[in-house]
Amino acid sequence: DTLKRMTEVIADVAPDHPRGVLTGPNLAKEVMAGWPAASVVAIDDDDIAHELQGLFSTEAFRVYTNPDVVGCEVGGALKNVIAIAAGIADGMGFGDNTRAALITRGLHELTRLGVALGGEPLTFAGLAGMGDLVATCISRQSRNRHVGEALGQGQTIDEIIAAMNMVAEGVKSSKAVLDLSIRVGVEMPIAEQVVGVLYDGKQASEIVPALMQREAKPELHGIR
Image (cartoon, rainbow, N blue to C red):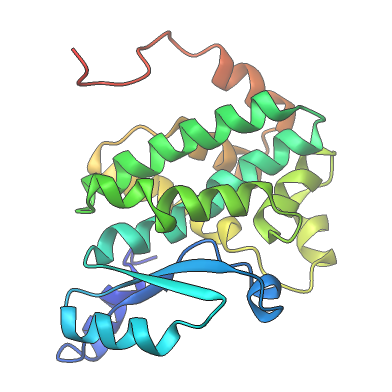
């Protein structure tokens, strides 16, 4: 309800304590299995960042540093909402073109919101942005993608939550993401449609015309 990032919440409780985040495409089962993976530790103190980098790094877990706490934290939260949309597309039986379009446009949405909140644009092309987004949108282990897939197959959100043993973060965070986007004036059509399905009684099938029949626009702004 506060629309605060976790490091902002920690700052309220322990204002003099260093705050950072470890994030990236790190599906827990694969990390625990010792499969090669990469992550990023974001903290604005270089000395602490390098200390944590050494602490977390192993032969199979490569850790990078990034001083952009805001961007890394925002990317880790927003990708869950886009993953629900990707799951809906999977549940409706669409293919790789659809998934690629959702991931790419989803990255555009989370980048614009992240930058508006103070993140660095390049962060969203890295592990905390694109990397985490891709893994969460395509993996069968992704709880958020699973929720979307079940929605796309016709289940209700109440049925899905009742059958799950774990919480999918995007279900709760989607409304906060949309509220944040409204606060800073950033349009997020994919997130808006996900919230509509989760909370406003919209059918998953209604997402397709809502997104595909929007006003024609340039892909990118600022090229010319």
